[in-house]
Image (cartoon, rainbow over all chains, first blue to last red; front, side, top):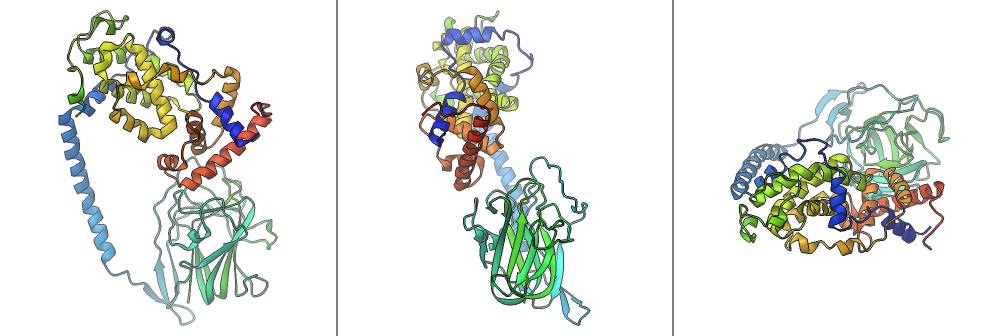
Amino acid sequence: MTDQNLERLLRETLPPPPLGDDGAIEALLESHPEPASPSYGQGMLARAQHRQDPANSLKQLLFVAAILVLLAIPIAIVSIAKLAPEREPTAQSGPDGDVLVEFALDYPEPTFFGTPLDMDLPNLEPARSPRLSFTAPEGVRLISHQAKVTSSEAKPFIGGLAMVTDGQKLGDDTHFVELPPGHQWIQIDLGQRYSIYTINIWHYHKIKRAYRDVVIECSPDESFSSGRVVVFNNDHDNSLGLGAGEDPAYIETNHGRIIDVGGVDARYVRLHSNGSTADELNHYTEVEVYGR
Amino acid sequence: MMLAALEIEPNQPLADAAQSPASDAVPATAEQQLEQIIREHASAVRDILIPRYRGGLDPSDIDDVVAVTANRLWTHRSEFARLRSPRAWFVRIADNVARDVLRFGWQKARQLEISAEKPYLESFSPAEEQESPEPDPERARMVRELVEQLPEKQRKIIWADALSRSGNIPAEDLARELDIPAGTVRVYRKRALDRLRKLLTEHGLSPDPLT
């Protein structure tokens, strides 16, 4: 069946049949002589009149103006706060003598939507308070912004691979890349070798779900044939064939997941997944790599 | 304002032909007439629309459709005097609103509610509705049930396209209504059609009766 034929079938079957002439409609109304609820419809006329009363329009304008003024106050406060100097990282002493700096991440608004589905993952971690910051040696910075991203699938279903490192972490329907079902990976080229300390990852977090077989590996070699270091692995049954891992599966939220790497020397970061508890597809909203 | 464009004043007496046969007391003004129509028939209109749009609009959507219809009726209350059957007009406009919502989304349907320039009597043509042949009810019911299995946004795209009189609704228009990128609309449309094709085949509603 071609798309055209299917669309024609839908045009012929989905729209309701014609109402007919006034007589047919009268007959239809006669078949519903008693109101299901005597109060149904009350207030509709009042609303209709209210909308068209010029005095009400003026009242609505004044009301909207008052709301705008009230909204402007917090927006102005937030804007002033953003203009203020960025918060200084908190310095601590590391065990190896490095000065450790605390990084507080910038998180998107939560966007949970829909009814959560049952999660059938045996290694799913229990609910816990989100980890909101990490510490890393002084001099560490975000090194993945606008970095080149490639993937196991050259043509994503939705979005583009550049979205992975564009700094947008929102959980809505416009800031993620969707890869085909099954095992897929993306790979970030940092441009040169770095000591990588932390990787932060946001899959699709609008709907409650946990991604399966999340494996993250780093390597100085583009093909990952040498110097490969696995820094996170929750593929508990080795279904990807990259080795079984003991890290827990976790539910996606706007806080993403902070993964401590500890100074791995690498240029490339590869992130695997194998669908989620919601569907077979693979999604990435943002990945941040911190190093020096 | 709209009131200035009316042909008669809201409290102008109406022609006898506009009176509802169901009423005992004779309404004197357009306002009273409209109040009576809504009081007596809003619930029946709701009951008529729910099965007609099952799978596309749920009962709470139909409540909103009836409310939007009341607004349209009020906007065009000057035309009551010319109506042979105001309550049939109520049903027709409600049916049009339901179609508008499915075709263009709530945002556009509400805009139509307040910006319709020509009278609704002229904008609606029963002959136009007769263009599409009446479908086999059982077949239509099964297709609707299968469409109901699609995710919400895919379902809305399919309904909008099915009610469009001039090919598929532009992806950009649907993107605005559904708050997703136009590219995503195209992907969802393709997925929905692929899924429906599979479901129709599984339920024996294929094989290609239209080629």
